Image 1 (cartoon, helix red, strand yellow):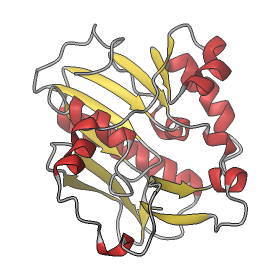
Image 2 (tube, helix red, strand yellow):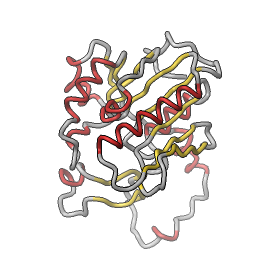
Image 3 (cartoon, one colour):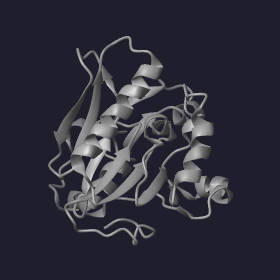
Image 4 (cartoon, helix red, strand yellow):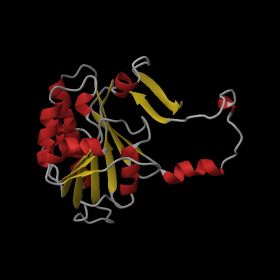
Amino acid sequence: MLPSGLSSVPASASSDVLLCFSHLRWDFVLQRPQHLLTRAAKDYRVFFFEEPRYGGRAIRLVRTKTPQGVTVLTPELPEGMRPTDVTRAQRRLVVQLLAELQPRHLVLWYYTPMALTFSRHLVGDACVYDNMDELSAFKGAHPRLLALERELFRKADVVFTGGHSLYEAKRDRHRNIYPFPSSVDVGHFAAAREADRLTPADQAEIRPPRLGFFGVIDEPWTSIWLPVWPTSAPTGTW
């Protein structure tokens, strides 16, 4: 079931499509987009349009179906394309996709304003901006990102923020904005209580009490909280 605010969009019909545009790859790490979109896949045909991969001989859209029913779409583009050609290619792929799908109802779901460069022409029954992070604060953020975010605020019917602080920073920028903080997958983590209570071999030499962390350590958080650590580290338990 989708979050409240999309209740006007009919569900449970195979011709209803949710098309998500994301700056994150589906298989990078299991987090908010995967949790929400796999739930949406129970009622919608969900397509996850991620950033291009380069090195192909021709322009094509690679499709991968996840076990949860989400179709991951990866544009495959030749190396050396100019940015304007990359934008045109992605726009063409999106147009071809929707011409094929012929959705009765279309939900547009954005995780990145940058996707507007090739999708601003789309008109859906609902447009959602899930503002998971302050992307403009990330290292290497595109100079047009803030302008495109302003455009996305105008296009979106509803905006969710990935926490209360982000909501407070942007609450005056949209008429229909809600704090939607991430939480814990209770069912998944509760399974650990049912597991064998023996200490894992890789933790045997660590004296209790132990503090665990599972998630991503990456910039900009490392530059704020962990200045002596590398700017990127693998997901795991620390």
